[in-house]
Image (cartoon, rainbow, N blue to C red; front, side, top):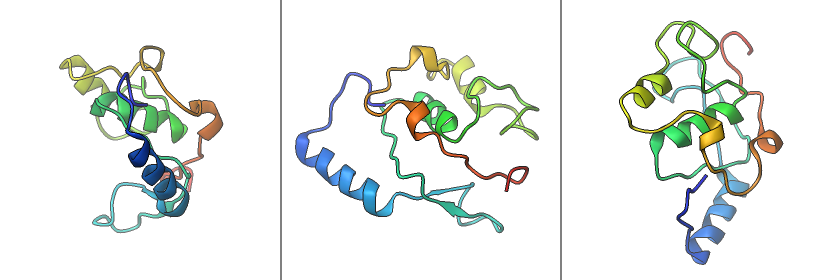
Length: 116
């Protein structure tokens, strides 16, 4: 998800190498006990943090349009919804241009406390 901006060819090659060799995601971060690493083998890059997070949320198998109290936001407000309401960006995948492999082809069953 890069919007209308394209990476220079050299950077694209470096990202492809990084994606193949080291791309790891975490459930939260290393500062939280009980997290685990997963390697879905994909890197998402974007110009807007809300749209990039919405794409990542979908890749992780969750609905970026979900409200607080539902999957992924079980015990909190949807930060994607809050950011969207403040005009930072959209979480609606129908309004986000994804360039490259479609989300459905890279979807990864990201573990959570309820699915681990």
